[in-house]
Image 1 (cartoon, rainbow, N blue to C red):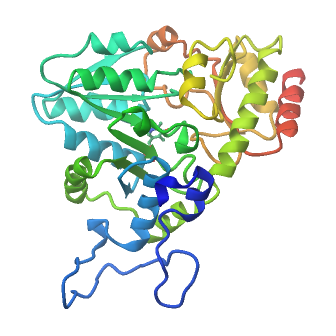
Image 2: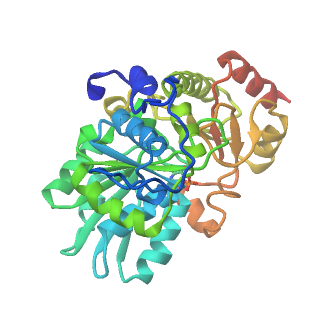
Image 3: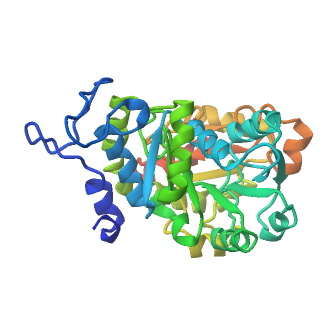
Length: 381
Ligand SMILES: *Cc1c(COP(=O)(O)O)cnc(C)c1O
């Protein structure tokens, strides 16, 4: 039933758990950490077994949106990423990881995976051949994101999944930036989808959580690791997540509209040297994005050319708050060189194209004209 619904309907209805007590129309928040042992057959409930109805509601909603068999909700995006990779990899294995994945993922791979004797190859770029070239006899997993942070590069998801299947590798994608409204990687052959629910799924900058969606057979394995690692999400946060996703479809439509309109406006502005947004026809990944995405999202980055202009712009903007993170209803702006990529050597940043004047925008759901007017004023000021 749930997989036959369209995305906006799933946002509202998928995953809901009945209130058996008094018939409320929302999923009850079960706070208990102790549950009576069933007299007859039936599972014993415990939060760290991820089997409380409040947890299941959020997990099943995201699984339905991703067209996956099953989902698991965890305490952060990183808990989802680490539980997944520590399940699929063991000492002596090799993983291929995109070099511009989320900073936390990069650090986890570089420090923890290597510490456990797992080999890691970092691949730069969007070409599937570059990933194929890195495959070794002990390669097990390819991990990537699209679109990426902060340069909003696009990788062909179906081509990646096809190459990996040919070589017998599992693919894991971090779908945080796209959301399941704009992109459903499992339909394109990817094995595991991960979200930082702290971003668009939560959507109101007041929640930290993560989600894994995959097949039942892979989840049986990831689940065991997640039980052992213990990164559970509290009942209230599970409720917040499930409640927030009811408006995900509506929010993402407005993020898409605002992202595109602002990118188009900035691309014509003489003071902006570079605009990275896959909805623009001259973006190198535009064709691929059009093929695999239902919308181009609310994330873009711009380079005003020099740090002074960029600083002035950030100061002059009134609707874009200078802040980290992304995906909320309010618009945000930050300097990746000072935030997500501050630990990278300046020359490595320059090589990637992450200049000191690059600004990353998380475009919110405000009125489109107001956001453009804010930039127009800020650029003139
Ligand atoms: C924020 C983020 C993460 C990490 O999520 P947390 O909830 O902060 O642990 C992972 N991937 C991407 C793309 C992110 O933006």
